[in-house]
Image 1 (tube, rainbow, N blue to C red):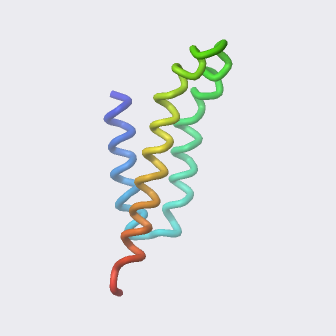
Image 2: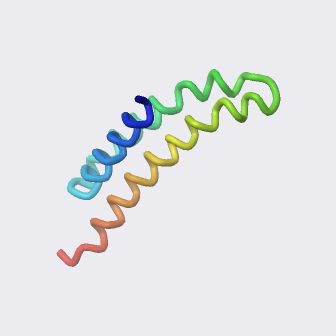
Length: 80
């Protein structure tokens, strides 16, 4: 369920970044905040366990960043 929510948010952010590049930054930052909240807790686990537990949340943050930046990049390549 979480994977579907992150994927849906990424698609929505991609479309928003393509249509309104400046307005897409605030939702992107909000997505980072929501996706990064569990990372603060899982990073406190000792040793490699903390690294392994926080990895899914870091990868979802990376996906959010990539979808927003690629939408803005696609908009920049348009001829108009």
